Image (cartoon, rainbow, N blue to C red; front, side, top):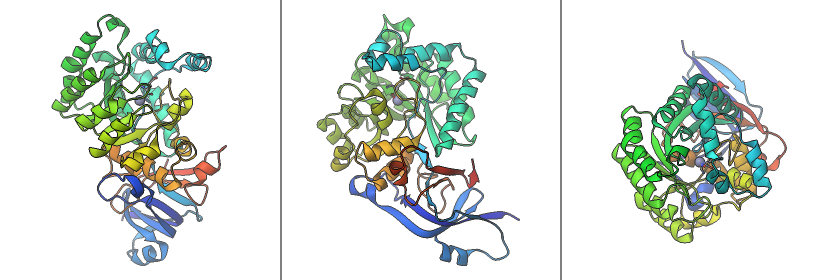
Length: 413
Ligand SMILES: N=CN[C@@H](CCC(=O)O)C(=O)O
Ligand SMILES: [Zn+2]
């Protein structure tokens, strides 16, 4: 006989999935159930609601394991839709250089930044890369992330991009859901420094077809930035990726307003990321085309730059999601709790809006909303138990983690 799990005595906070990402005012509509409960059957939510009603609906004769959540708040497991969590080594010295005034893009121009991580990833074996990535992912899981996107982009050659994507693929289901993104267009590798166009051709002619045919990635992403990939390069790379059936993402207007947001709208990408420098014109184009913005406040914080204009985006009707951007350079952070906190205290989102952005909208950003992102019947029983009464505790109690327990498909991790 199958054992059901009954989680009871909870205050449930969840956005409600209506088949599309939530935008504008809708982002603040979060369902709250005091004295709530949920029943988990084989990892999925079989029913959820008022404890009294849930208890009445329990089938008699079934074995039930009961877990008392002692009145704590539960929220959907965080979905982190933008990370570079597959890497080797750290870049602490560069961080110190940045504190002394060096800019992120200047460090990259000098062969450091992303390129210094590329050297380390290229010289690591697949096993070493797997072990390191697994550690990053398990720290993410402890912070409440139950679904995570991970990009390649520190290989920058067919051989090493594939090594990264295979490692990312191996981590799927172990225990998190992992969504792989191909990001061969993350930087121009040193060996193509004098001929960057040839690298763009390599990405288009060899890497994308190889990755797509072997199903190694769900999305293709490009770092469209001054001195990295131009708007025209990004357009060509993403159009090629679309031709091979990959979903599209774009690192847009992170440092300079190159027109990345406009390109995201033109190509109708699945999400546009960063957007620290995006113009109103670009944001309007995104709103008109229903393009999701994935905002990374911990990156702005770590780079000591102003936050993305989240409230303006929401006012224009752009659906907003949040992500860590976890990487060893611009943002060494695997905590969505930290991101939530910055969204509330730094970008002015309400506690409900930040919850929607870090769960349901984040799930839409990586095509996972059918399975995760809200606590509703039929979705995976992925949730976080907070040491507090509302999700707001994560912004209120600053010095500690407020994540008490994390459940993936009804099992504690
Ligand atoms: N901006 C480009 N890529 C990453 C940083 C990667 C790195 O610095 O290693 C980002 O999204 O912030
Ligand atoms: Zn990124």
